[in-house]
Length: 490
Image 1 (tube, rainbow, N blue to C red):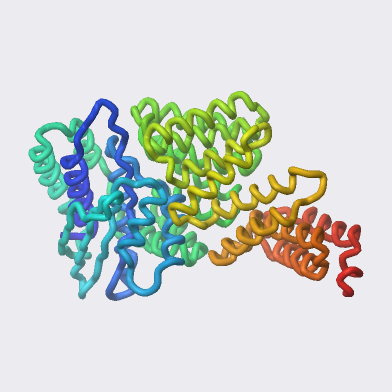
Image 2: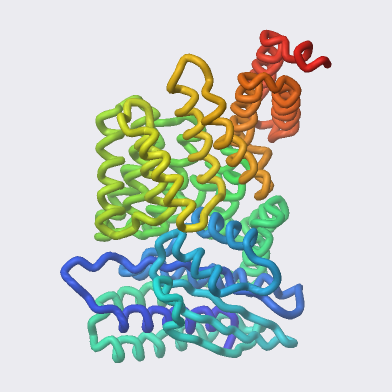
């Protein structure tokens, strides 16, 4: 059995376990699944196989209407959080905690190894709520032949699945048809793409080069184009990101795939970039189009739909349409609550966004969001963002800054980003600026000067595509106007 065949076995085993053990009710929300990357052991030249298997599992599970797969962004957030907390071998209790952060029902985790050219895959399907293993799958296969046995194995497993589900899985025929229509990549381009996935988090520039090489071999390689768009976004090269997300979208439109989950997701990702580029109306258009796709797929009782409602609310906020902004925030919040997903990063972000200008409960919502993130053990990027906003809210309660209350939040937010190496970001610069102002209010002039000069230094080293010259001028003016050099004795 080859690597992709192994992925299919895992996929259908997961479907079988989750669907057959679930009791259906009048209101049956989608089951949320976090695919935690498989851990690789063996010859490092084949490390890409683990990334390829994890991606295949994620992509194919997305096709099942009853499943909602945790997005790449949220998956990376929780993986980074867990890696900070783990030392040595992977800790299954920690991976279950990762599942709880994104309100997942099930966690797919495991490992794969290479001995010679023999691939061994061991995977577990874990119920997040209990932490108990629902099923374990072990298999062996060859790495040489990647695609030949894939459809045969998939059909046999689907037939077994249909038999065990007593015909209750009405999506069987559709899912089987999707597999039969699936076009395979060549081995060369697939290897480049999987190698890019393996390098994506630790060396994004190398990952980008690999994705672009895969696209050179196959200009219609959707997954590689979408991945390149995402890496460019992470690097804050938004024009390049927009180009590749748009290219991926056109690929799907050319093949008529405009009613799928991945089409809705590429619309959503493109809309995020358009918003960063201050193209609000185009961002809104694509977000509403994505919303319509989810509605046509009958995926409105899902966290992915709730997240999209929240995103649309943010765009309406950018457009100063407070009525529609609040309407979409309310819809998103209500759906999260209906789904029982209040203890999740997504719900905390809804509370964060409802603390926008004009809200009468801003501080209350922000503190609630902070508590949720702390309760689920998440102290990453979005946590720092919430802390910064809380500090700013305290400072805005009087004509003067309120450093005694705000400064601890700013310091904690900056510390969180520093632990994760996220210091070359606008959020970190904002935190430094707020810390500097707080130190100035407390008459800690040398501390204020050091922090503000640090902000200026980082802004000079950041992505040259970002125009930060105006920010540096403001820092110099602020230092001079407050005579901080002299007060510090420098």
